[in-house]
Image (cartoon, rainbow, N blue to C red; front, side, top):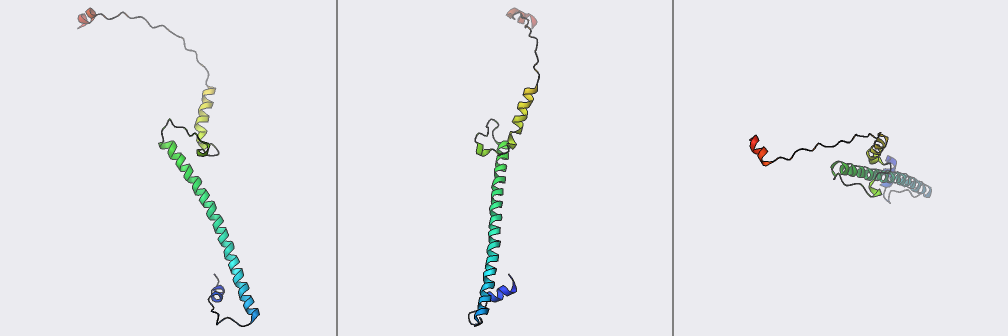
Length: 128
């Protein structure tokens, strides 16, 4: 506030001038001052709304990061409202799919297991 604004606002009815043009000037100054502060208030309210939205978004990111870090590994994020719009947390799944698609197939030659003779009680007794 300007010094002029404070002095004009603190004047009592007894100290106001009797001239109508001076009174109109005081009222005009007060209206301009009020308009200026209302505009500033609206700007601050808009900033506050923006900051609150940003805080909510960051809290959601922190919640998702905690869920991915400390949550059960078998749980998957199922609902779309829990996922970030850009799919930040889907990068690992996307990369895994790409890698498995690019791997060449390898054929392994099969083999038969040799049959072993069954162990009898007499074999165990002879070895001990």
